[in-house]
Amino acid sequence: MVSRVAPLLIVAAVACSKGMQETTDDRWAIERERMVDHQLRGRDIRSDAVLQAMRRVPRHRFVPAEEQGGSYSDYPLPIGFGQTISQPYIVAFMTEALEVGPDHTVLEIGTGSGYQAAVLGELARDVYTIEIVEPLAERSRALLQELGYRNVHVRAGNGYLGWPDAAPFDRIIVTAAPDEMPPALVEQLKMDGLIAVPVGVGEQMLQVMRRTPAGLTMIKTLPVRFVPMTGKPKG
Ligand code: SAH
Image (cartoon, rainbow, N blue to C red; front, side, top):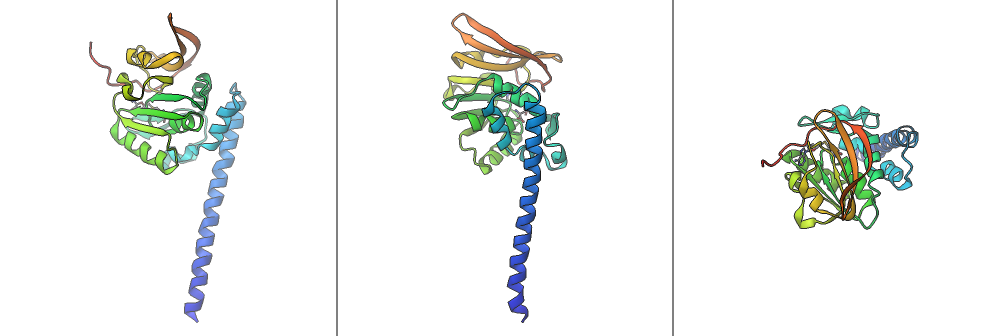
């Protein structure tokens, strides 16, 4: 008798744990929807494509387990190695300001958790992202692969040098703060391309600029606080 009952119990247990997983996913989806409504649409984020991308990316997967409760809250969170995942609004603001299109090749400096790269991966053809802390680059590469972002390419290295083999880029986003614009990044940006970079020490100003034949022209600015960009080449 027992041997007949046991398979049924196993089936019931599997069905039950699957149900629980779905409930948890639903809970995250509800929190994500609320984040998009209150923090993004409720402010000045208007691009449907950006709102849709941020509805899709499971931000809680990019946050360490002990911080997961705050995944969809209106602030940055620690991700280890003294680094942070940016506040959702800042991710949306930068992504919208860059007007990322489906034909674009995008360079990101500062992969961190990989979340911003995933949001860009929803919108662009290809995303190249560089992280100077090797274990962070490895962790993010594995997660992005697991989540199916085949168009996001992660490299451990120094973003001051850009990614010459994949240049030129339609868009460049820098998510750590240099004290001044890294020249290699401007060289690797296409003419008419857009770049977003938080410049400054302590007090930083996010600068969104377009490359023109006459040089960079400012499109918009926003006071921000990012971790400093490390590894500036000497001289
Ligand atoms: N975009 C990230 C958040 C960035 S935190 C996200 O979505 O989670 C900033 C990251 O920039 C940190 O992980 C830091 O290690 C990295 N960083 C700092 N200086 C760098 C450099 N010169 N090149 C590449 N990455 C750098």
